[in-house]
Amino acid sequence: MTSPRLHSDRHARRVVIVGGVAGGASCAARLRRLDESAQIVIFDRGPYVSFANCGLPYYVGNVIADERSLLVASAETFRERFNVEVHTDTEVTGIDRQAQTITLHDLRTDQTRTEPYDVLVLSPGAAPIRPPLPGVDLPGVFAVRSIPDSRRIRAWIDERGARRAVVVGGGFIGLEMVENLQHRDLAVTLLEKLTQVMPPLDAEMAAPLGAHLAAHGVSLHLGDGLAGIEAAPSGALAVVAESGARLAADLVILSIGVRPETGLARDAGLPLGPRGGIVVDAEMRTTDPHIWALGDAVEVHDVLTGQETILPLAGPANRQGRIAAESIAGRPTRFRGVQATAVVGVLGMTVASTGASEKGLRRAGVTDFAKVYLHPGHHAGYYPGARPIHLKLLFSTNDGRILGAQAVGTEGVEKRIDVIATAIQFGGTVHDLAEAELCYAPQYGAAKDPVNLAGMIAANALAGDMPLADWAQLGSTEALIVDVREPQEYAAGHIPNAVNLPLSQLRQRFTELPGDREIWLTCGVGQRAYYAARFLAQHGYHPRNLSGGFTTYQALRAGGVLP
Ligand SMILES: Cc1cc2nc3c(=O)[nH]c(=O)nc-3n(C[C@H](O)[C@H](O)[C@H](O)COP(=O)(O)OP(=O)(O)OC[C@H]3O[C@@H](n4cnc5c(N)ncnc54)[C@H](O)[C@@H]3O)c2cc1C
Image (cartoon, rainbow, N blue to C red):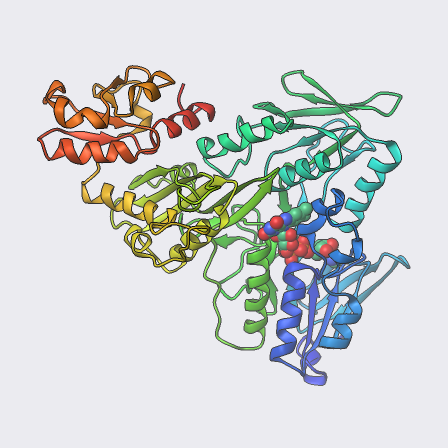
């Protein structure tokens, strides 16, 4: 029997990579740049390596019309450019850690063989969840993971003349599929178990997106889970919801999440973490010194909640591929952890987030945080075409450290979240956001960019210049709620029980307000309420600001956070 050590004694070091897409391909290419002597081999059970999974929904939607555009690098590119050997249609079915060999199943020839490794890298990704429910394997029910999956969906639409689709699951992939199926002129129903779309977001931040989808003709069926799928003899499908509702479809997309592909690791005795991903250290090395793992299959450290998490996104997978390569090449390296920076665009609306959500913080047991809402234009209001960005910033009440941000709007959304994401990576505080020097010309931003404003509002709250009222207490507070908008604005809609005292009259009439009672101030978006709060505080009153004003109130109600 071959001694494990002999692989490296006799030959160039043999680095075998399982899975050659986002993480695996990055690892191979980076390792070659660091080590010309290693023998690098990629095995992938699919027909392609290094394809653009993120582009698949747009291929279904024919926005990307040519399938070849999805192929970022071919097996030939890997061989010619990087001297990396690629075997597609080859599934790795087992790992013998003692012998340092893997078992392979060649899907084209149906042959099985073993191959040695000195270093093994696992980047097998995550598989779409197919719940064990009746009908999920019926023809016409699809998940989207690979190019052949998208090809099948396209063919189904074309050949069957599909007119109606039900998308099950309103997360990133589900929403991208909604957009692309609508782009193919299908009538789309979205079934989502939660009462909101985009489950990672706080409900009030997802509410504008839900309204946007409905306004664009998407039939939303929220707060109802999938019970099963039935097929009529004609082939027409019916998605049956837990409530008993039946949603007619010619095509069903299952996008209810992904599960790390950990079978190989588990069978080889590599530990899995509480979230079901492969356990790795900061260099992406498993507990076996010869095996690294990365991408969707591993658990990573969430830098904001301090907990281990699964984050199936392409950016982390790519970075982890580089880090594993550096580690394998013997360079000092370290993955910093994740903060869940993500964006999705759907039917002209963009939703982006970074760091923890409010519900994520609560789940993690974090209590010493506060939040502010703002609704600034994406550029200066005097320049035509400014569009609102709805922004929520979460920060530590101890030291002002930024904990997370979510934004929704049609323009400039992801730019603001990327700035805040970068600040989080450097351990930034709300004061850093207030001070951030950002681009400004009228068509791009404002002299006080939305990012600056978010920091300033939060800093005002921390400094005690603008104490925050708790929206959740709105129904039970003893405070007097004062709406400082103009009477016609107030008449068009206001918070129940709010009295109207416009900011424009406050200096003359403030003595009408009780001095012995807390006053909660509101306006359209929070700005005039802040001015009123500063005035009243300097006159001995105890004001608090309902952050984000009536706009936030409406979002909280639409999101079901407030009754
Ligand atoms: C439709 C879709 C849209 C997405 N959009 C975005 C987006 O917009 N932004 C974003 O950040 N992320 C997006 N993602 C997620 C992103 O693609 C993944 O996070 C990323 O690809 C993970 O990289 P990975 O290397 O871990 O796995 P993958 O890129 O999935 O690669 C894993 C490969 O391993 C192969 N494999 C698995 N097991 C074996 C085995 N035993 N033997 C051989 N081969 C095996 C698989 O066939 C697969 O080719 C999207 C994903 C999908 C499916």
